[in-house]
Length: 212
Ligand SMILES: *[C@@H]1O[C@H](CO)[C@@H](O)[C@H](O)[C@H]1NC(C)=O
Ligand SMILES: *[C@@H]1O[C@H](CO)[C@@H](O)[C@H](O)[C@H]1NC(C)=O
Ligand SMILES: *[C@@H]1O[C@H](CO)[C@@H](O)[C@H](O)[C@H]1NC(C)=O
Image (tube, rainbow, N blue to C red):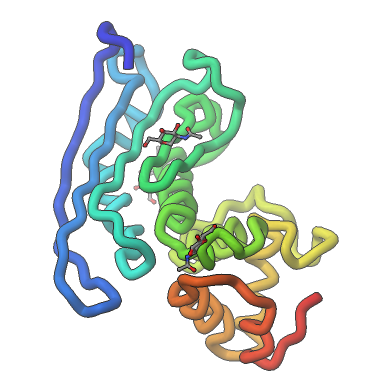
């Protein structure tokens, strides 16, 4: 961080249930690095306090052992990053303020959706890094979608070439599976959550599906 940069931060704590049923604390911290830039939509329409609330609400402490989550909002353009909506690195989330600034809809809702998606990536198990990347982004979108933060600009149902293309394509696939077979997607997510050692296509066969 440049020393001249102003920022606002909010820290929240929550007591959360872990899969072992042990009670533990998670700390969430949100930094607004656009603070001091006049009239950013993040500052005006979202704010760090709302950001920290959303981050805690989206936390799935059963998934991984993190006890500290950091979310930072900054201009990717000003920091020389390529234009993407957000990035994650372990338990750190970086959200692109430029994306929110020009988002053609409600920026608070979109920010919340981004928090649910990136929290999915932060918390979900990866089968020790062996699960297909498309499945991981698909589960993260699925978590956003089932938490009620769908965005109309997503690809339409039935588009896409492969079930594991990732993002909304895979999320739609998971949702369709859930519709056909009650609880399928939640079952799969549960399998992924517990699958610490490695991902295997045979997870799907447990649900009566064969995936190639
Ligand atoms: C992820 O964060 C760690 C420190 O927490 C850092 O060393 C590493 O370079 C980061 N990776 C990327 C791709 O930014
Ligand atoms: C965005 O939507 C929320 C409800 O999800 C609403 O409270 C808020 O006022 C909306 N913001 C704007 C700028 O319309
Ligand atoms: C995870 O993968 C690494 C190699 O990538 C291996 O050394 C480690 O034993 C694996 N952990 C488990 C729990 O299987």
